[in-house]
Image (cartoon, each protein chain N blue to C red):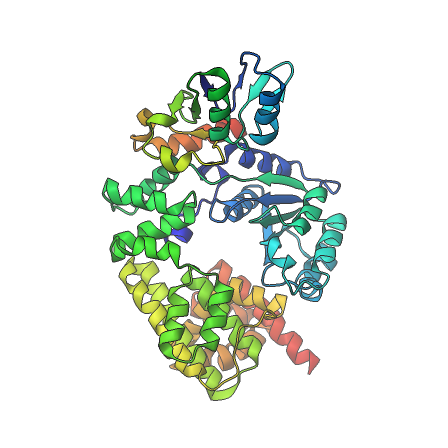
Length: 403
Length: 116
């Protein structure tokens, strides 16, 4: 997706809100244990999250990100944050804790989440950055008092046009001025929407541009509709109406499936169907054939939906334990690559290689440096893959030790 | 009267009521020694309408071009109809600067220079 591919990695290459960007960079550069947490306020799609990641990257911080609207209760927040808060000495890197969408905490399901965030920001040994879309909520005002507030404005249309043109130029594509202006107007100061619309306009025709903006619903609502749908058609409507990125949809469905405790053949079928959708996203990334996007939602609504039929999977706020999530999303790709190479060597499927072969290989490597060297050489693992293999070695040996 | 957003300016005496409207309702910043300043929080259309009525003259809001520093005349902009809402933007780019392929790079360099 263009929004990911062209997401600025450096605060300098972002657009708009110049003064706020400068102020936030200054805050992070000068951060000390007595500093107040940062609270970024402003409408969606104007670069709050991008700024946090880009600034952290530039200043050498690792980011622990939580989307607070998915983790609304005190217990859930504690579960996710405790590992980093309690064991900070084990984490060598500089860590920045980013609570995105803190306004989501203050929903009807709030059970001490507000107080927990307030306590957390008081005693943190790491810089804490919160982001919210609204500021008029009374409860957000509680946080405003104890934080350094950075207010973001919608982005000027001319700057959005400049950024979209720049992306099109880098992609070797172009749009006529009329379509471009329509995209900018429709985006209403939201660069993410503009980039998405431009991508769709280039790949799937300009007529979809306005539809995309008007019908967009959040991933949580879309998933609730998806899992409660009575037909594939209803499921398709839910997915098509969701403005989230394909990867976010896959991730959310995956988390819900895993959290539901689904097992056996049903689980395998559901994950296989989900992997088909993932393959499409991968192919789009490789081929830049964005027309394939239209098949993405269809696969979710047919193959995944059909695979889940009759099972009790629905959207769940509680997701996988924090360490497992980190492993899956940060290391999953590398583990997948290792498994694929193992699979090729042992003439088996990647799934079998990941489930059965990899733990044994990891355990054997853990116990012998020379065996590890052989594995690294045979599988032609690079530095990052070796790092993940060693973590896998540690995890497997700990599991064996426990037993 | 032309007001450049972000720059301090002075105006003829307008009376207490108008002053209160400008500062409290339109969020125009006031400082005794510097005068007035329109910030990103300022409701620009409201400022323009209050001043037009009080001073009996047209008030035009200008933004600074982030690249060349020149004034950007919002009234001439093709996006003026959607940009002139309740919130203002601290900066923009002028017509001359926007048409260059180098603009995004120059914009980034300008930001980096200020950040340093």
